[in-house]
Length: 91
Image (cartoon, rainbow, N blue to C red):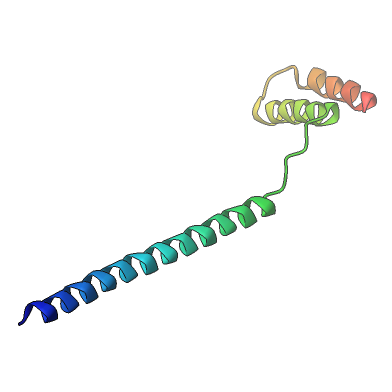
């Protein structure tokens, strides 16, 4: 192989490597863009949580009392039912 042919071969190999790295970088950026786009679309689909209000707290309290009534076999069930009736009148 003559020095001129070696120089041409070396130049083509270097140019090929540069092209390979440029194409891989462009592909990687494209994949990053698609990933970011999918993340933003997924975030847009998630419903925003509404702030809790007093009515939700009141209903939660009633459910707790009902759970206790269902699991307890004690003497004070009538008192708890009456307490629930009092809460119901507030709603």
